[in-house]
Image 1 (cartoon, one colour):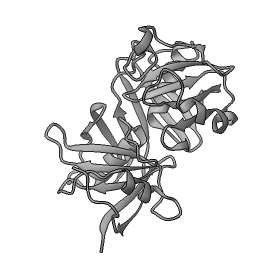
Image 2 (spheres, rainbow, N blue to C red):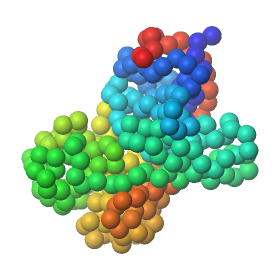
Image 3 (tube, rainbow, N blue to C red):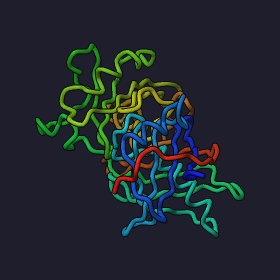
Length: 282
């Protein structure tokens, strides 16, 4: 009958979820690409693999559609929280998840028997990090010219790297996203956010490394808020609506960026059985 897989999305940023807490191990790039293929597979922006954890309720391994492995995914983590918490008796509010960016806490916001939204403690935002250009220079990139472009940007780590463009047209994301994913100074490539101000908040389009244009990106929304705060577009410690093509997320950051929270919806789509084409990776 194959392996049971589950489809979830957060504002259209969609994932195949494999619950392997009882055994089976992680998967590799070939299986990831097969599952994410929108014509020959299930179709998704990424795969979420749940594994047992010695330090949290569950360990999460995230795989981009191209088979690469990012450190963190805010929309994916919300989907994991819905999957685990809704299946846990008593409707618990919190879930601790082990990720490659550390242990993060998710809080479920319930409406009757269903978890409608999830608030995530995303950890700190950093301007100095090994996967940012600041690792080479020791100097944060804040509102600086982006080489080879007419734009200015801010480099932010949310556990994964982001380049937030402050003056690039949103409609140019498909043009500038591909070359800037491999921008100089980002040794592991980078997500690229195209940011604009709007009444009542921010608007963002994200080119996600290893995926391309996405309907939403949780870590991208957080990085965008940090860049907007540094640019003086929004006040510090103010919950801000960040609207992506798939809809709005709500982001808050401490004045020193030591703590960032993200709130947004998550939805179950379907479950099915799939024959896996690759042996599990230990």
